[in-house]
Image (cartoon, rainbow, N blue to C red; front, top):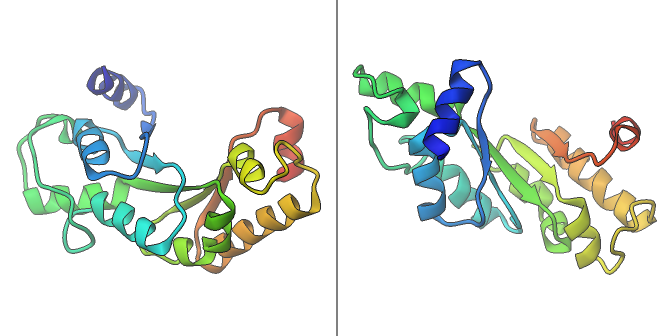
Length: 173
C-alpha cells in the first residue's frame, strides 16, 4: 500500500512523509526503501535517540542506512549507486517529534544533531507530560514552545507543529 501511495505522490510532485510508530530501524528502513521522502519519529527525548534516527535515515558517510537499489525509492531504475546515495541523503527529510517534558528539556541537544531537519512540537502529549493537558495558554507550555523554537533557530532547523485550526496556525506563526 505504501509503495503505491509513494508512486502516486511522486507522479504528481508531492513529497511523501511517514510518521512511523517508534524509533526502531526495522520500522524506518523499509519505509524509506519503499519510497518515503521523509520520516517522522514520535517521542524523541535524547540526543542519542536523535543520533540513531539521523543515522538510520542516511547512507554512509552520513549514516548507516542499509543499501538497496533498483527498488521503490529510486523508481526501480538502474544507475550510479554513489550518485543515488548522495541524492537520497539530500532529499530525505528527518523530523524529530518532541512531545514530552523530557524531550523539551533536551531539545537543544536533539536539534543540534546533524541529519535532524525539523523539530516538531507534539502539543497534546507535551501538555499531558507537563501535567497541564490541553492547556495551550498555560505559561509553562508557552515557555516550552519558545524553547523548541529557539533551539530550532540556534541550530538552523525548522520548527513544526500540527495546527488544529486556521486561528491556531495564525497565532502560533
